[in-house]
Image (cartoon, rainbow, N blue to C red; front, top):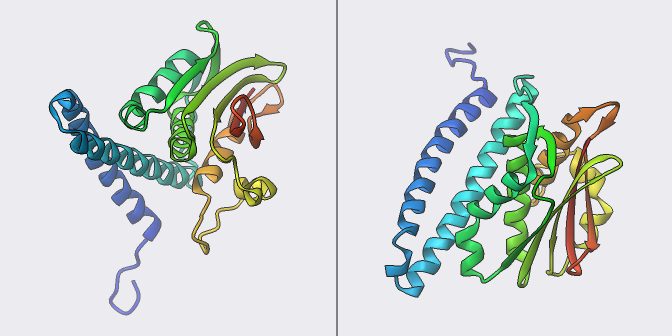
Length: 230
């Protein structure tokens, strides 16, 4: 305590507040999901507004989860729960989480993966990582998105393709930096890529480490996000 003012661990206070906000936001998202069941009775403008609110609530929820995960990682309280999971379930969850907004925008979502394909990863962290990338892709794609997964020599490769304008040059040129440094002094913090890079690198197996990669082109000619898990 200094001069009668209690010392405050701001990071802990922020993490506690973020946890409370996340719980409230989850209740809000559940309420929005309930409203979706009455979607057919809503006017087009109301349906559009509902989908937009659902989309923004998902974005906020992801950001809060990222903040909490980074806090726990700093405090070494983020144990990875790595187990074997079917990739099809992961893709289905991403589609369901964003079904309302993708349908409103008339974005066609395709899946290219063996229904029996399995992977070893932390389902919550990897799911949150990919959901964040998918949500961002919804903002920039024109008409379609692809969730793709294959097994290669390095392990499991998951990709998200879109038919938008692609990643800007500065992101491709500074991709490694964005994945390693969190720049809070600029308008674009790169929190999503920073988080993705950390979670990918936290997955290790037989001397190999997970990684992410950004490129343009792919199957639709737009941006391609790749996540490699050993």
